[in-house]
Amino acid sequence: MTEIQAEETLETSAAPEAPLVQGTLWSAIWKMSWPMVLMTVCTSIVGLCDVQVAKVLGYSAQAAVGIAEMVVFVYMVFFMCMSIGTTAMTSRFIGEKNLPSAHEAIGQALLSVIVMGAIVTVVSYILSPVVMRIFAPSQEVATQAAHYLSVYGLFLMPFGINCVVGAALRGSGDAKTPLLITGTSTAVTIFLDFATVYGNWPIPGLGIRGIALAGFAGSLVGSVVGLTMLSRSNLARGLTMLWPPNREYLSRLLKISLPSGLQRLGWVLSTYALFFILNHCANATAALASWTIGLRVEALTFMPMMALSLAVSSIVGQNLGAKQYDRAVKAGWHVTAIGIGIMLVLGVLMNVFASTIAHAMANDPDTVAYVESYLRINSFSQPSIAVGMILSGALQGAADTRAPMWITLSAQWLFRLPAAWFLVVQLQYGPSGAWIAMVCSMYLIAILTACRYQSKAWLKIKI
Image (cartoon, rainbow, N blue to C red; front, top):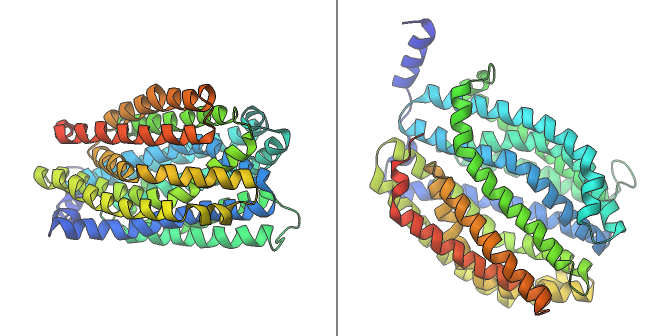
């Protein structure tokens, strides 16, 4: 036996017990859920802060931030999908007490996002003026969005590192450290949002570039904190395995991650199509601004569902690795029940306070009216969001990423967009037609995802 093999054998035998396969299932859900809920709330607050600060620069700036960030989301998909693969592999290997394989997966995931980050940042800088002219409803919005995107592209590499580090820690059963990383990043971003726009600091006249600079700085600080915390954990050896590339582990990561990436990419591209549909409204800029604002407000409700999705992903992965299949199945349904209860309450609140929120987030009368209709109509979709997001996360934790991909793509492209076009353009319902199509498609996703989960076919998937 070689020295390396002996070290890995010792490391495997000394691997800690997977924390999410012990104790009651409810305690494991609580342990993973509350830090993830707070983490995603932090993310939502940043999005709302960006839009609120942009309000000072005019409602065209609000539209510009929304459009630019949707373009950035295309780039972010590459990193977010890698986090799915990292969580699935890390949690499964931790459940199996196979720590060396977990280290190898983490190292290769970090290598992937660093290389992708460098490439995508350059592409973003070069293409931002061209892309913005295609999607923006006016030259003013296009110019501001290009300024924003040219700076915000720097955000991508540290964001990718944060995705992988957070995914690895969650896969090991540690949800508190990702919360610390995100909380630090959020604090820096919000401080600089207000400092650059309201305080005109550190460089006067940054305008919308200041909002982008704040996002980059916050992400960079978060990545430094994340790598430091990872180096102090039992996953630290993964930092030494970035090089050389390991084809076996890269292939396994991509097999799990790519369907998730295509799922998110399909969602983003369908959103772009929705932008084109909203451009047919009488006041296109107000419609786009209202979509930007409404989505960020709604994120305060569905981001906690993303947190529960991330939590159940790790729980399912570890229990599958430990061969506790019944516990893995129950985890998905238990967390879904929690999510539905939360979303019923939040949906009622969204409907009741729709007018108050709309007036707080916008000044233009048309934008206020469109935001109010967005919140009232989408309040009815909240329970379906819980089912779709949480069970999709459970499937992804089991490395079943193809089923959620096909469900999402079918619901978005074969149902939501045709329905939105018919209601907005043919029947001329205005933005409300798009909002109705969104709600109906979310219920379709929920039903199909629940059917897939209940089939239990995902229990047979190997990593």
